[in-house]
Image (cartoon, rainbow, N blue to C red):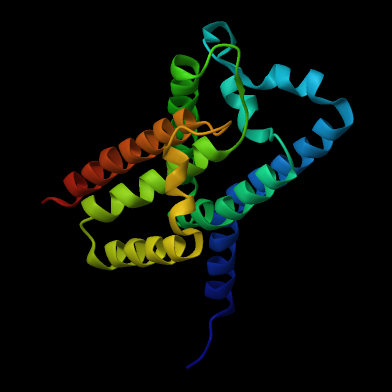
Length: 204
């Protein structure tokens, strides 16, 4: 078999384009954390999502890149590497559709249902959006190979995280179950819409 350097280069560029978005987001998360450490909580909390903060909808964009501590950041980084990249391999358009939808829906859920006086930060709402997308897509996907890949990926993810990930849906401590639940719903919504659109496109 003779390899084609041009074809190989196109494949490499394709993978670079697919994987760049989640890796850039992870880099931004860590850069923002460094800034957080420098400026202190009195400043960076002002960029989180406040309960009932309908006048600060812009915080839906800033809050995901902020984290309440180093372990919060590390856990979200690990989940972002796994679920974010699993979503990103389907292409930048699909990745950004899930990311933006999950961020908006989870942010709205936080504003509506969070305890008065609370401020929510973290990428977990978006990460749960990736989870919701992959889970729902595994059921509505028409392509058997794609369905199998999604199911296997989720099984491996659950073996790694166990029940810890599902605990994110349960109200407890300072964990924002609102962001997790609504983020997952947002991701699932994208899966339903995109898979139905692709199914119609495949019809003669």
